[in-house]
Length: 130
Image (cartoon, rainbow, N blue to C red):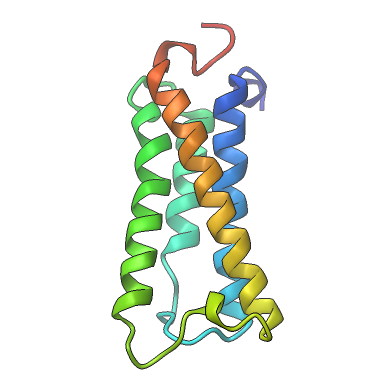
């Protein structure tokens, strides 16, 4: 827990935003949005990346702070576009839970990406004690 408290503000924002995005994906999955695999990998990838940024002692974890949300945005968009037989949750605001999950996921990923870019620009300052 001590290492987490030493994170810089952008790194803390990145970690929290990735966890929020993972929660958004989980909300979409459990609300019955079409097109999800049996076990969606997104929440596991994002929470794992957040754990690496939070507790990883390596300088390269700053790259993870950018790549995880960026890949989630790109791959999530591709899976939505290529899923011709289903509809995107953002196109149906009347399905409240799926719509809310998609909005939470999207906002979390955008915030995580922005904070991750700041973290990557200053990797030596990922920890305030550094």
